[in-house]
Amino acid sequence: VPDESGKGFTDIIYEKAVGEGIAKITINRPEKRNAFRPLTIKELMRAFADARDDTSIGVIIFTGKGTEAFCSGGDQSVRTKSGYADPADVGRLNVLDLQVQIRRLPKPVIAMVAGYAVGGGHILHMVCDLTIAADNAVFGQTGPKVGSFDAGYGCSIMSRLIGPKRAREMWYLARFYSAAEADKMGLVNKVVPLANLEQETVQWCREILTNSPTAVRMCKSALNAVDDGHAGLQELAGNATLLFYGSEEGNEGKNAYLNKTRPNFSKFPWLP
Ligand code: 2NE
Image 1: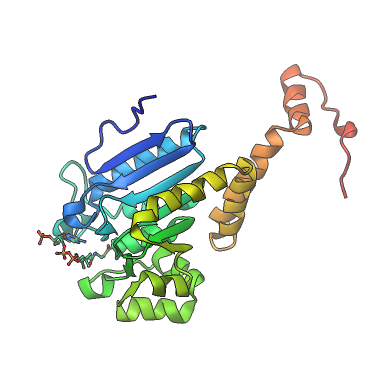
Image 2: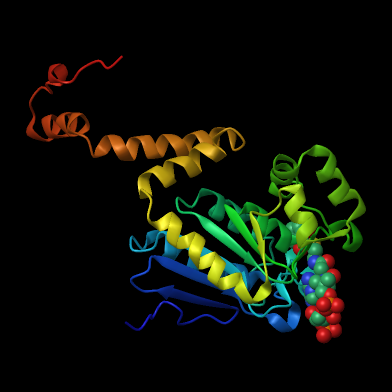
C-alpha cells in the first residue's frame, strides 16, 4: 500500500511500514551532519504528531540520513540572538518543544544512531525511549565549545541516565565517546555493527509490537512520572482517566447524567 505520509517535507523523510505498526522519521540534511534548523523541527513535530495520532502505529524509529550522523544539533550557521533563524517565522529554540513532544508521546520512540549524535542531537537521542547504536556511533555534548548549553532535559535526563558524575564530565569537558563507551555508561541499549543497525532496530520494534499497547503506554508514562513532576503526573493520570472512560463504572456516571437520572454506583465494589 503506498504510504502518502511523507509528502510535503523538505528537511525530513517520513515513512510508515504499512501493516507493520512502525513509523520512521529521518532527519534529511546529511550535508550538514543532520543539523537541525527551525524548519527541520517544525517538520519533525508534524511527523511525530501524525505518528501519535495514527492508531495503526505503535513504535516510531527516529534517525538521521546516511551513516555519518544521527544529528549534529542546532545548525550553527543560522544561530541568532533569538535562537535559530527561521526565514518564514520568528527565530526560536523550538527543539525544546520537540523534546517534550517525544517525552510525552504515548508510544515508544527508538533512536537509531549511526555516526555522530552530538550537541542538541545527543539530547534528542537521550529523550527517546531506547537507543540502538551502530558501532560507528559517537556521542557527546559540544555546547560548551560553541557557546551553548541545554540546562533542561539535556542535563536532567543525562544525569538520570548515566549518573551525576558522568553527566558533569560530559558537559564540562565536552568530549566525544565511542559507541562502546556509551554502552558502558548506560547511554544506549545496544550496539551493533553498522550493517545490522536497521535490522536490529526493526527487530526491537517488532518485539515491542507483540505486547499490550496499553501496558507499554502506562509504563512509558510511569517511567517518566517522577522526573517530570506535575507534567509527569498529569500524563500518568491522563492514562488512568483514559482507562476509566472505557469502564462500566465510568460510563454509569456519564449515562446517568445524559439520561437525567441518578447514577447507581452501588453495583461497583469498593475494591481493597
Ligand atoms: C558533527 C561533527 C563532529 C562532524 O565532524 P566531521 O569532520 O565528520 O564533519 P564536518 O566537516 O565538521 O561537517 C560536515 C559539514 O556539516 C556542517 C559542517 O560545517 C560541514 O560543512 P561544510 O564545511 O562541508 O560546508 N555541520 C556539521 N554540524 C553542523 C552544525 N551543527 N551546524 C552547522 N553546520 C554543521 C562536526 O561537524 C561538529 O562538531 N559539528 C558541530 C556540532 C555542534 O557544535 N552542534 C551544536 C551544539 S549546540 C546545540 O545543538 C543546541 C544546544 O546545545 C541547546 C539547544 C539547542 C541546540
